[in-house]
Image (tube, rainbow, N blue to C red; front, side, top):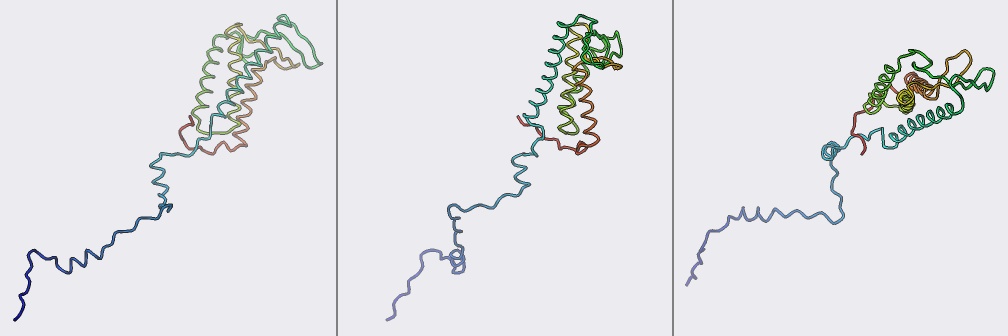
Length: 215
């Protein structure tokens, strides 16, 4: 007698689908310590927002301020000593071609534009502003230019202090056959010469990328 054939009580999964499900293994996890692929430079730069490092740093700012301050201090000290040592109009010869003279200059450098103290004081303020703007927003960057700007700034401030508190500029460095001047005048002229030298012989014409400044 033949045995009864068992019948299925529920839907059966097709054999092809069952085999396909078993053929898809779960991908293994990467071993511990494994390095993930590095992101492309473009993605990193976009994510971090990084830019090329600025050429002007805190240290260069400090050097600029210190150099300008040294010019102002040295200029004012020499003028105070001169005013306490020599009476106005006196001259102390140190060599046949060089003397210290106490001269009240109400004009510009080397005695030009005499009698224009107020106009020259305003011009000095404008010059100080221009130097500061050029330093902090420069189209070019060169250490010699920064040094020249610091010398010009210190000299302009030194002479401006004279015009405010004395009503004139004290000149005392007196070479024969040459207009008398002071430390501030010398610093301004050396600063201008430094910038000219950088323009002619330095790498000043190389443009610097604009970038955020260091904090």
